Image (cartoon, rainbow, N blue to C red; front, side, top):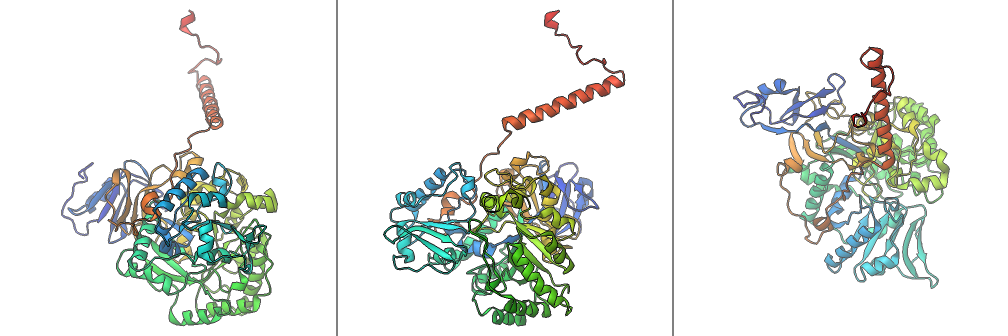
Amino acid sequence: MPVGGLVPSAVDHAADLVVRNARIHTGDPGRPQASTIAIRDGVITVVGDDQDVAPHIGPATKVVDALGRRMVPGLNDSHLHVIRGGLNYVLELRWDGVPTLRQGLAMLREQAGRTPKGQWVRVVGGWSAEQFAERRLPTVAELNAAAPDTPVFVLHLYQSAVLNRAALKAAGFTKDSPDPKGGQIVRGRDGEPTGMLLAAPSALILYSTLAKAPALEGEDKKTSTRHFLRELNRFGLTSAIDAAGGFQNFPDNYSTVIELAEAGQLSLRIAYHLFPQTAGQEIDDLARWVEAARPEDGDEWLRLNGAGENLTWSAADFENFTQPRPELSPYEAEFEKAVRLLMENGWGFRLHATYDETIRRDLAVFEKLAAEGLFPAGNRWLFDHAETVSVESLDRIAALGGALSVQNRLSFQGDAFVRRYGPGAAAEAPPIRAMLERGLTVGAGTDATRVSTYNPWVAMHWLVSGRTVGDLIVRPPHNRVDRGTALAMFTEAGAALTGEEGLKGVLRPGCLGDLAVLSEDYFSVPEPDIAHIESLLTVVGGRIVYASAEYEGLDEVLPPVSPAWSPVARFGGYQSTPRTGLSGARQAELLGQAAAESEQHRRWRARRGLAPESGNTFVDPCFL
């Protein structure tokens, strides 16, 4: 592309990829803005303008024109269940972004007709009743009408699931089925299950029921994972920290991403955690793992980052905000053994902790070990979620060398949280500004795919606006962050949580070539439209892994979605909706601001003798 003097020439060490004519937000205080970037062997070599990059363009250099669009560092979701999500992606009907329940049910009805006998229709997370115009869940009767014979399982956050008649039969629920610990099978007057399952407050009833549905096998698992990673690339994600989770066994469920990494087919960098799955066996599992590997083993594409998000099942506090906070039995003795084992062997960890009551108990164990010199000891550790963490606990976390990762779970559960704990508590859930004011590293994430959607821009909108997907204002201005801070939480902070702050999260020479060219300018688009941003060009290590609009066809070819009846093959993933535009009130507000600026300009001119003192001298020539 011989534009503006960028003519290829025979040069040593030519760039593999150049992206020019962009408005680049580098994240680098030394050079915050630029227009052109060059990448060679997966690493950024030049950040500057066309003149800086011209000497690095050879005959084989691919030059892409960003057409004046905004470029940002590749996004990093610090809490995403990417491994589990990839193994199931093509089997799931995604309601992420769907604006009405009517549309969701129409999708479900059509998919039921496409689904072969023996398979289920699964709607598994990424949506909330708050996002629908109807503001409600589907009923069992609606699922039965939409799919009389095909099992349908609809998961709503970690709160509940709705099953049709065929799914109840396929899952084996009968009048005699006992309620599992921490869960409830809702029953009718005749004692038969109605089709509603409740987390009360444990989500294990939801997990275990979903696990009864058929799983993918063989190459289909790789194909599903590759398409899920491409879907994440669609939103500018180039890295993620996998938080493990229930029913994600090591090494079985990790084998797919390991094989893709060995074949060079990952399009997203993954740092993963290991989560002991069997209650009562956690210490034994951790002991085996610390003998076999060390955190940071691996490379920039796939690396171990530590243990968690649970170390012992007894210490897990479930976050169903429609239910009271769980009262945990004493767990400190086993928990202390787990933490001691990890710290003595150089392993970091992350901890699922929703409530301050749990965090305080965990911190007491850490402070006991700190007296022995185990905290702070350089091991990376963090609390996840922390919706009700107190400022006192934040001070203790800082003193012990910890960090935090927050997710936009209240984008989807904000109304339930407000109804249970009140608007005052919701205003500080979580206290993001207090975390940042203490100098703590605070990564941002989504907790997708079974709670929030994996679209990071929905989370970014929540960080900036304090609003839920139902447009309820939960967090007031004093507990929101500006757009630059929110972006840094999704880039630099994520890199710090994996010890890669010198490698990614910013666009500077020597860093990994991970970037996204956006559909809209994140820094100037109206606030409601932050959630509608997508990436048009996503680059990971100099590879174009996602391309759309003018760049369509520049990315790598993926195998077709398999099986052919997959909901993804028909509907895709996240359902984009049009930009909201300006409401009438917001439009009038902006016009009022423009009028005020006009009057200020007139007065400025009048003070300099460039206009009359009075602002009422205009005469319409039609009346002369």
